[in-house]
Image 1 (cartoon, rainbow, N blue to C red):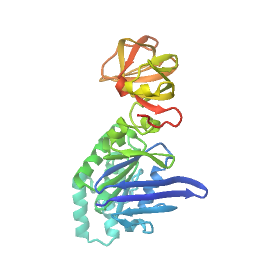
Image 2: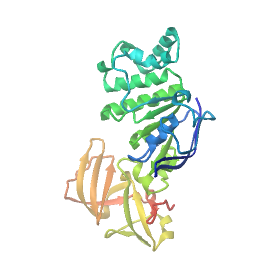
Image 3: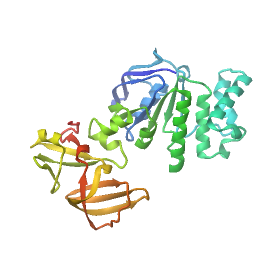
Image 4: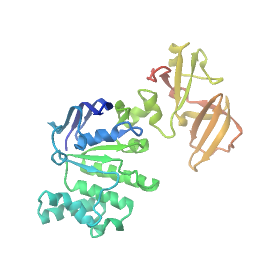
Length: 350
């Protein structure tokens, strides 16, 4: 196990800068998830840690050893790819043990490590099969097993679940988290799926445009987003945003006046953007008049989208609601849970 430190990491392709001075400290044994939209630089950053991409400037250290000029094989890391990267002509056991064989390990040592990893991942009955005989989830476990047998200091995962169906993704993210709990090895995991980030990470790093917008525990980012971008990216369904001017009785926006928490009084007369998470909406008597645009019943909860003045907002309710598209409804808010952001640059105001 080892800590990983990135210091002022930059990456350019010709005149195009894609990573802009990233600083990141990852503790020994921590599960860190790099998350962000497509093109934000998260996979490029991971590949630089792995040694598959050169860095333009800065320093990467693994276990307090600077690895800038080391080949991937000398960094003591193991990487799990999106496409599994299994050899089709090799059995599960041979795939898992190939890297050890390549490093000159004994047959008995390889067999011992492969059987140990297979036991952890539930692959023991599948060791004599070929990749074509496996399901997507089984292939992904084999890819993880191939990484585990080496006992690296750091595991790197590059969107490993993106090829799986929704149900299997849920199962596999639980298995990866359980694997981390067993091995206690440093893991860096890249995904564009913020649900994966929220459910798996000890620490989330939100990237945008090659820069870190915010890092912290999942609940820190959920409850105290540093800016509008993080607030909108973390959480499903996404946070609602409404822009307007703060007045003594609330935010005047989109043809309505939305009540605000007392802390908003210091912004009276200023343009702001408020953020409201879907679960903080209420259906209530004497609320704000809105029109139902869409109802999505999911059994244990109901998601509705309403037109409030000129704004379209989404609410998530832990109950079944008898509403229909086109009908009227009165809504309210958990006022204390409203977030305030600068209308100019999106920075958090409180």
